[in-house]
Amino acid sequence: MNFVRKILNSRSDEDGNFFVELEDILGFKTKRKKFYKKAFTHRSMNQKDTKGNSVNYERLEFLGDAMLSSVISGYLFNEVPSGNEGYLTKMRSKIVSREHLNELGRDLKLIDLVQSRIPKDNFGENIHGNLFEALVGAIFLDRGYKYCEKFIDYRVISPYVDIERLEGKVISYKSLLIEWCQKEKKSFKFDVYDDTGNDELKHFAVKLFIDNRVAGKARATSKKKAEEKASKRAYFAFQKQISQ
Amino acid sequence: MNFVRKILNSRSDEDGNFFVELEDILGFKTKRKKFYKKAFTHRSMNQKDTKGNSVNYERLEFLGDAMLSSVISGYLFNEVPSGNEGYLTKMRSKIVSREHLNELGRDLKLIDLVQSRIPKDNFGENIHGNLFEALVGAIFLDRGYKYCEKFIDYRVISPYVDIERLEGKVISYKSLLIEWCQKEKKSFKFDVYDDTGNDELKHFAVKLFIDNRVAGKARATSKKKAEEKASKRAYFAFQKQISQ
Image: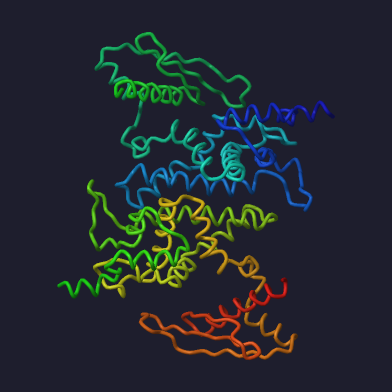
């Protein structure tokens, strides 16, 4: 029985490990640990507090969803001073779309931290986004709004949000990068390999070489997505170099 | 022409007066004044900043709407520990409903502070809620999230939000109060008078006397609403006395 429980319940038995992994994701130290434990407790654990209220991440999703939406609103408000209300609303829904939240949660491997009595294969795709929202809710309760802003900037805005791309002005960073390499007379090559590991879904890893040096790496569920991600990273790295 | 402008543009010509009135509504001192000026500038003023971006309250509505929603979410999360996600979402939509926001903005007489080139009679009902949202957006930019929480607690939660009422458990404070008066052998009387003044809509003011002393006052667009409001205020005042 203990053996079965160990398989189903993959949160590190030692809270120590749980918080080491979590703080690596967060980029800061946690204070009130209980909120994070709740954010990674699935309802199947049937936990209750002393007053009989359920202890799991579902209510934290409600809170985190609202905080995420506010932080992104604040970001867009400052970032796009020419955008009207309708534009800002549209951009916000693209950033906080279910699909995007699932991608964020999956990339951070939040599912590895969940404590559950049902096998993780049964969770369905939305678990990733739900955990991401719950985590933002826990951050708010632990450290307040400022830390939500920091975390969302670190894990959502900096790596993923790109207004030009969201506006559909840039369709593909891969073609943008190829164009740039041709203009600058640089060679480029994508190295793709299977990187599924323990994941339930097939994953690909990509290394992008420019002039035979690694210029970007990425991992995604399709070859095309991984190439696009690596291209975007390389593109921004080059832009930074050029502007310095 | 100056005379016409003076009629249409009812923001106090002196910024001094504008901020005295505004800080009375806010309950705290403002720092970065420009955000509040923007929150009360109608698009008909055709103001632009040095980069050609429109200066009016419309973008601030987007920001304030998100902050309001977050603050109410945080409040409900803490206040109703037994409520699940669906319940919390339903309660939040009741509190931030268009109708409720219009009521909030109207009660604070935000429209008196607006700078506009079109007559205020042409604004329509939603101006009240829009200004309220824009004001919350300005507070966020000026003083941050904490002050949004303070302001919303002061002007929304404390005077208006009542979970029992929202849940439909309390249908009428008037009947609750009458019942209480009968039980306590106290006399009660509602004094209603017309209080339309300069408003475009008809308004009623109500004084509620309990044992011949004023126990609650209110003002609303119908006699019934004003009586209900006055009853609620008196009911909570009595509850406070009893619990002390």
